[in-house]
Structure formats: C-alpha cells, structure tokens
Image 1 (cartoon, helix red, strand yellow):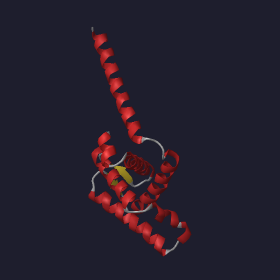
Image 2 (tube, rainbow, N blue to C red; image 1 turned 90 degrees about the vertical axis):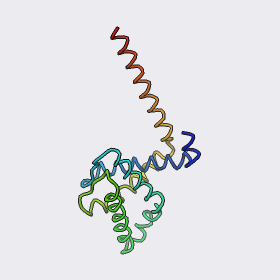
Image 3 (cartoon, helix red, strand yellow; image 1 turned 60 degrees about the vertical axis):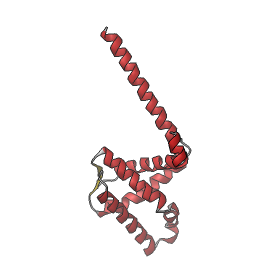
Image 4 (cartoon, rainbow, N blue to C red; image 1 turned 135 degrees about the horizontal axis):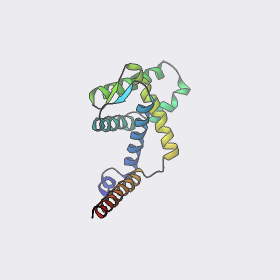
Length: 151
C-alpha cells in the first residue's frame, strides 16, 4: 500500500473509499437504482465518487438551504443529469427514470457528509488490509483443518 500513499496520499484514498460506501448505501436505499455487475458497480461508484469529490464542491449543497431558489433547483437538476449520464456511460448501475437520478446525488451528498462526520477518522485502507489478512488467516486455518482431518 506504500504506492497508494506515494501516488495519492492515504487521506485521498480513504476519502474515495468513504464516498464509495456512501454511493453503495444510496443504491441500496433508493428505489429505481440497482447494480447489474460487480466490476461495473465499482467503476460507476468510482466514477461518481470522483465527479462528486473533484467537480462538485460540497459547499454548494450546504449553501442551498440559505439560497433556496431557481438556482438551487437548477443545481439539483444539473447534478442529477450528470449522475444520469455517468450511469448511462459506465456499466454496472441501472437507473429507472430521471427522478431517481435527480434524488440519488442528493441522498449521496447527505450520506457522504454523515460518513465523513461520524467515520471521517477511520483508516479505511488499514481496515481493508486488516480484513484481507484475516481472510487469508481463515483460509489457511481451514486448509490445515481440512488436510489434518483427511489423514
């Protein structure tokens, strides 16, 4: 994982993972969205997370309640259209209609903010590495138990 630290920085990678978790929860909660493939789902989660992390500023969403107007409605529709275009371009997630595409980024922004607030200091990279090593240990244990039981 040193290469990730060198290329992107652990903080950026942790932020991307938390954004992907928020998008996964959004897909699970919102009717009209569903996952069609695992690899494609990771691509769309990464694509939408990158667009939301680097193109759209979270401050735009936080300023909407103060300036609830035609401009904020246009922002919601534009964000929904960007989400809808990404879903259509990248395989992995299907959307039924434009309304789920408009509400998905809103729910995603709320969930992303909540994850950042309550789990912002979680080292997601370290957690993934820990889970990976635990899976390897369980596999090795099961192989030793299976091979000793066969004799």
